[in-house]
Amino acid sequence: MANISDIIEEFILANIGADAMIELSRRELADYFSCAPSQINYVLSTRFTQERGYAVEGKRGGGGCIKVYRLTTDDMLESISKMIGDRLSVAQANYVLENLQRAGYIREDARLLLATSISDRALAQAGVNAPVVRADIIKQLLLRLSR
Amino acid sequence: MANISDIIEEFILANIGADAMIELSRRELADYFSCAPSQINYVLSTRFTQERGYAVEGKRGGGGCIKVYRLTTDDMLESISKMIGDRLSVAQANYVLENLQRAGYIREDARLLLATSISDRALAQAGVNAPVVRADIIKQLLLRLSR
DNA sequence: TTTACTTTGACTTTCTTTGACCTTAGATAT
DNA sequence: ATATCTAAGGTCAAAGAAAGTCAAAGTAAA
Image (cartoon, rainbow over all chains, first blue to last red; front, side):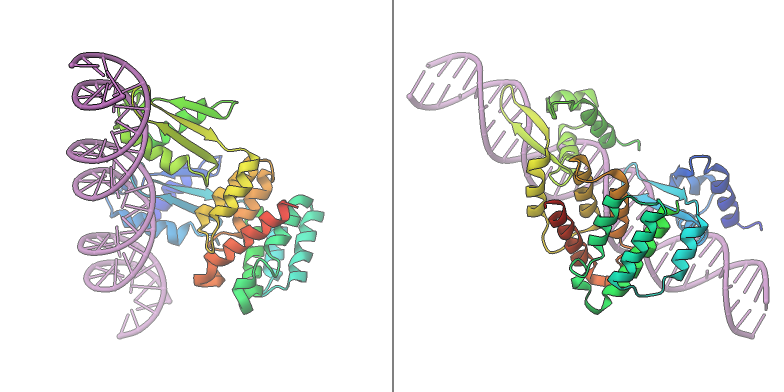
């Protein structure tokens, strides 16, 4: 515990604040800590990953910046998410969506739209991969709902 | 957020008003924000696009001006379906979803969930096909919403 | 001594800003 | 009427300003 990455991690953690978001400038941070700009990317990609409960979003060009969000996890969603394997049929996915509605995470209109988005028609182009894509979509939804 | 383009965008959004239209003078705006006149065109062509639900119309010569309209529901479904080809980027798909929300077809929570379901992460397994799958999902949504 | 983690920097991609040059519409003079 | 002038807006490409990627080199831990 003394390397720059850890220090930068501390800094971000300390400043991410109550609204669970921080907006930073890669260049300024790098200047401040006297390191290569890409060091910031390294810290973000090793410490502020989705698995650890963070989302990172960057914008390039003049006035660009990097935003780091803290996701707040919910045990129930996490456990559902673990139960889901690599593949999901339309029926299984709909079952999950119905549960989410029942549990109050989503309303009926959203459920119907989501059902459309994971339907066989919508995922036709994914071919044999459709069940895998469908599982991923549902997993991402669970992640999103848990933040 | 500190670049002129974003500030000019804010300004236009703030002034477009209830009648969904604003008439502006390129010269005056550029003077006001101390930028090149063509900066205004840049803002208009990157932020006030059809995808995002706006139409821009300019008139040259003496007494010329630029009018920015916010599109309303009727125009929208039509222009959106025209816009959608075989493939759709995440950004494009999100504009569509934002338009749908603005037009009152979907609520914010549904939009966010749908955004998740067409994200790169969710469609990662579709690989190179992701933009095609994404376009299909959006098309199916439009079909569902229009009935 | 491996193996995993850090640090660095060259190169890429994306978005923004600027300026030179073009086109159009109305006004004015002939 | 017609030609010319002038005051708009339009286009495009080059330069600038971020952030992103990746691989090589350096360090620490097992």
